[in-house]
Image (tube, rainbow, N blue to C red; front, side, top):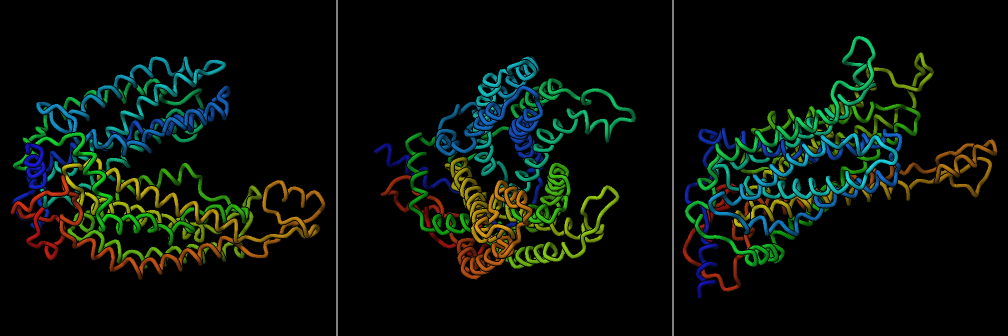
Length: 534
């Protein structure tokens, strides 16, 4: 009996005010700041882990085997969906549902950064390096950081007023971009002797302008100070579960709701779209730079290009906030698809004609005229910017439909589907490009020049590898066709999903949950609001 009444209360946890009011940050500005700060902190720890993987490759006594073992410590980010329901259901009421996880996680990460700062050079500068110690420590940091990511997403679903939900994707993407710059790019650049001597010093000196030890002490202090601000400034109970904050979700109920998500037809339609949405764009995104290298061209340095991209990513969420914070993010996404396909074909066309205008520079390197090079790089930035805007729009929709009872679990699940869809499209494009390519050695008809070794064998007998069928262009054409078919089919599907009521997205707490008369107010567009009950 008690369980039934508890399920009834869980199903009736709804918001009462109208949700289609115009966005208004009055009263929410501090919440937006705190939320962005949290995403920055989470991305700093994740970014520093990635920067260390790059720095380890430059160390004399670190083997590729040691490096591979270190990279494997990223796996908590791939598995955090399994303990996300615990984050939704286990907490200390007096501290707060989300702060019960956020505060201890951040204090522990800060403490581990301090400990790592005191030992980092003792572990990586000796022969042989103590990579196992580094792996164990970063395994703990990554577990805490991945849990922090889950709990922040869960808090994000309830921290803002309903009319301001669209700003959540802006907070997340801006915070992650800034955090990545602080955690990944700054350590690599300011720790690099070559970079500092080239760009920051008038005369060469040994070492970078900051040590890894200095960065780690800075990060640890940042986590402790920011955590104090979050602990004392924000009172979480004001923003959770509206009038039903006193109802606590049990662990079994949280996992039951998680399983219940997979029983929703709307979820499966969205999942199929997320797993295939990148098929039309992956070929251009992942193969274009390699194609330029095949022509003997030296594209912009990967690190510099990535740094420019993250600079753009810090600007895009703010510049396009008007479109991403609205009530119809999927409508904006659908309108962008033809433009993204067009710029992909434009990039392919520019690459196709590039060999015809290659010139030799003073260093006898093959290069392109400056205006043509800038045209390619500008087009590349436009494509990457549109891809990032896609992610913002999808996140905006995710925050709108996520069941706030299991907000951490729901957001993590949807984000994982998006990530797997991108990985699937990338693998497909790389495999198709190789499969559709056909080359032949001019002096050995049995040599198809499919590997570096076979190319060298061809050169050793005074032959040359000629391309009969270029897999890059075939893959781009096929990818564009798939993207067009996807657009035609999923255009109406996504629009229909955008206007579904909450009862199409939120699983019920039990099979026999009664219709209790509490009307569900959707934070989706107004024409989706009906008299359905939860």
